[in-house]
Length: 458
Image (cartoon, rainbow, N blue to C red; front, side):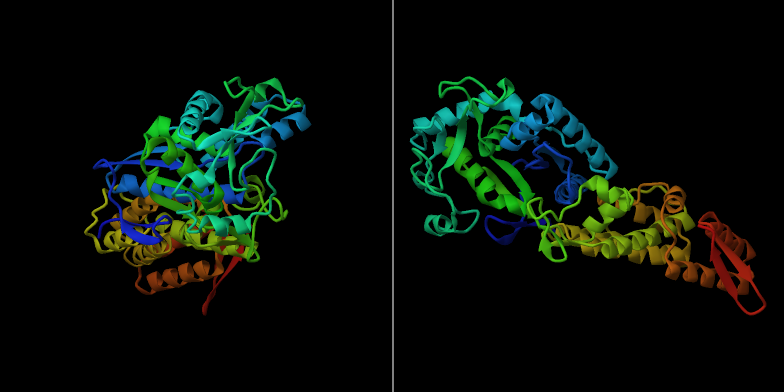
């Protein structure tokens, strides 16, 4: 089975065919760095980290760009509140972003452009849009995109201009021709610091949010990319506006495949800063280890809503420990994946179906059961190698298990049953090994003539 991807633009599952055989160019909208990353950011980073990992596992060269928005109204406001420069704030937040991403096992993108390094390219695009009658400078000095002059506007959201207009709650600003028109260049305000202003023929100001991504994408990946991604909340207006700008300038599709990860919810309500019901990555990592958080995200399909709760994370933690316990039981043999192997083939089928991580994770649990049953180092190695495609199971099993919370009670009972079976078979070396394995987890076994009980020293 070839790779199939759900394309938000067509609303269909499509066979993936890159522009250049063997190479994938992927652009994903990154963070606006005025604060610490939250769970929604983690969900997007992990989702597209899995995408690029699987593309590489499928023998593609991947050029992955994830931008940093380092100039924005919120950034300016936060820097002024903190009494620090914009650069000091954004440097600090980018460093924190990297720390959080590294903890979650997220591979660095090929390029991580900062918007402020591409203002010249943005101005070049704005000038071309103006020349083509798609942009105009309003009376207040802002340069806006004329939405109704772009014939394809609304194709990503699937709504007509009138439907989009009906959903707007804003009034027409001074000189703005239509409420749907969006800003390309913001004229400078008196209270804003000097670092937030660039000179242009449109006057002193700074770029709008949407033009930033259009310029960085074109500069680093070309006029058309294979995959453009981001959170579902970016589909409209951000990605819709990117399409209008980029295609307005270049006259060709911005991206062939659009991927959007689902929302994060808490008690089935969308998690957001405005509702005050969100958690930063660091707040979650104070209670759960990073592998558990990643596993919690990966075992839900990237397009589905991810519902946060402590109980869901606790369940993820115990489930992940079962996988690591199998790797601890039988040290993994280093192998190259044979995709014709039945387990590997099922894993590949799942991942080739729009990156079906829930089914792929199920294959890992099948392998764990077989490892426990057969004590096969080859199967243990396959389990670890497939886990790497998801960014999982790469830590030292013993160290991971010793660093976490108490073992799953069901897992403890299962190991005790395995030890009893080994004793019946007179395999006393195996029985002793299981006792030592549990002791390493601070689980002490107490044998009697009729049963075995256990006690946790944690």
